[in-house]
Amino acid sequence: MNYQLTEEQTMLLDSIQAFLETEIYPYETEADRAGAVPEERGERIKAKAIEMGFYAANLPESVGGGGLDYTTMGLFERELGKASYGLAAHIARPTELLLACEGEQIEKYLAPCVSGEKHEVFALTEPGAGSDIMSMKTNAIQDGDDFVINGAKHFISTPCVPDFAIVFAQTGIDETPKGPRKRVSAFFVDQGQTGFDITLGPLSVSQRAYRTYQLSFDDCRVSKNQMLGEEGEGLDLANKWLFMGRVWVGAQSCGKMERLLDMATEWAASRKQFGKTIGKFQGTSFKLADMATELQASDLLVMHACEKADQGVMTSDDAAMAKLFASEALGRAADNTVQIFGGMGLMEELPIERMWRDSRIERIWDGTSEIQRHIISRSLLRPHED
Image (cartoon, rainbow, N blue to C red; front, side, top):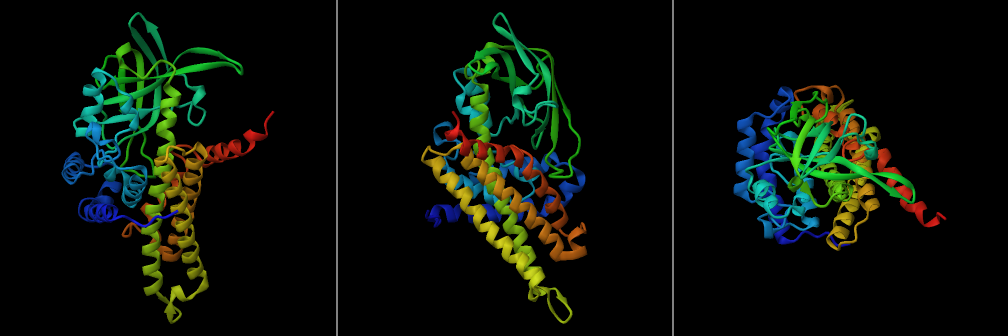
């Protein structure tokens, strides 16, 4: 594997770093303490991102996006991962599910998300169906040319109130060799549609400024033209998003690790105790060595998955390994950084305690560590099954 940056990639990263320094980092503490990003701040970030060509960088040029390949997107996500996600998420990377839009859906949903006129949410998780997607209770019953949706979603995260949701619902039961299986389909549901309600969810200790919403559907009637893809394709569409989403979590975890390592190293090289800098003590220096080693290993796993994605051969366990290792390594790095800073690591005057809190969610969203281990072990065992 050769991960030497190209000239274009170096220029892109330099531009993003400068953007974070001026538009994101100075406002992280304010947003975290408020538990929200002020609307005018979010709009400024979005406008500047569009001006800089960062907006919708993940989507192909053929639809107006930036057209970055997966490897370059991995580097892009890694850099953005260093920042508070509530702010950085305003540099939108619309879900690739939108590429499945057809006909009028392209102008109504895909094009406005690429231009920044609209913002979408991915609505899959339910109160009783998190990791166990097939426990989904939200259903969509066909009634003539319409579908009537009932149910609820929660932990639907987004930097601002969405213009529409991509909602996954059960539309029937299929008989399979392994027994009955729910048929899951995806629908576009617009903000303000009768029977569709969005309310602000509870405040999380991780990524406080990146809010969650609760979505409820009470006889919400949508046209069959609002179905994304074909009936029953919902899980296939969701998995396409989830697989790469897990790689992006891994990349963002690497960015956070690098920022923590830089702060911990600078502190260890300047903070003195017992007449010498604390970096001279093995109790501190070995923590730095472990952090640096795990960061490099995480970067390699993430870039390996991105390279395979560019070749069209990335597997679910490639994505799972990248997310699992990088997110757990981040947790250790955050804890070690707090320990190196001592009491100052828990004070609000420094970003350490916030990054420590923020790092915890990386092992949960987009599939818990336990789910990633299940995916990896299932892949290993499958060839030995009868």
